[in-house]
Image (cartoon, rainbow, N blue to C red):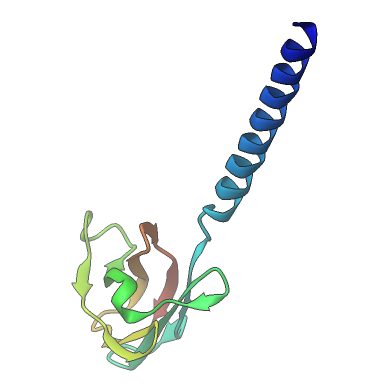
Length: 134
C-alpha cells in the first residue's frame, strides 16, 4: 500500500512540474513587443514654408504591416496658449510599409507641436515634435 501511495505522489509531482513548465513557456512567448513610432521632420520653419513630417512604425524589430495599423493621424497644435484643446487633425499618406507622412505649412509665427497618434497591434503611441515658426 505504501509503495502505491509513493508511486502516486511521485507521479503527481512529475505531472504538476510538467504543467508548470508548459505554462511558463507559453507565457513567455506571448509577451507584447513595444510599438515604436519614429517621428521625423523639421523643428524650425519660416512662416508659410512647407515641411514634411514622417512616421516610421515598428513593432519590436519589425516594420508594422499597413494592414496592422488600426489608426494613424497627425495633430498640429499651436503651443502659445491659443486654440486650447484639440489641434488640427490630418490624415497622412502611406509612402511605404509602416511609413506615413504629411506635408504642411504654418501661416503664423509661433511654437507648434506636430504629434502622431498611432494605434497598431492593440497598442498606442503618440510621439511629438516641437516646431518653431519665424
